[in-house]
Length: 171
Image (tube, rainbow, N blue to C red; front, top):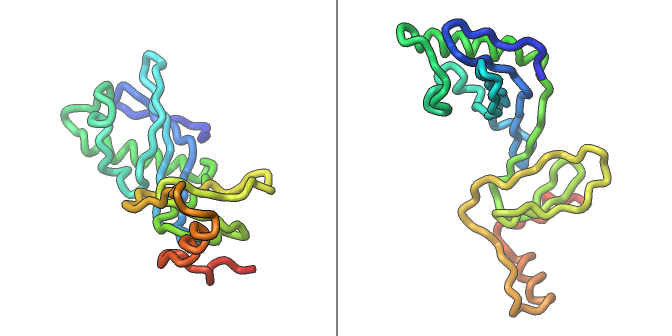
């Protein structure tokens, strides 16, 4: 967590940066960055939210939480001021790395082979202290188990899926 809070003149809240979230695809290419922040009101009530880094200048604080008050005379200037203060806190913020899987099938992330069913990630129990965070994106298709299939037919069907690329899994 960043040690200095933003001191946003004219607002009724402060913003503290908790972390920078770097999102990677299954090919380990960075696809986006988000900033996890805590907004705190003068009555000490807090809320945590995640904002895409590219939207910091235009983020609508009042639309997200009706309690956020920006000066009527210069809301755009205040939004830019808040965004600049958030950016100033980022070098001190911890970085979280998340892999977002957007394809069904087998994937290799680092040295770990995972399988994405569309709504779930299937992976071996972690053998490291801090395994990478992996999430399934909003994939329109989903693989479900068919209880009427034998084990052999299920395995053969899984291996013949078009989206499964066995060349990704290095043995």
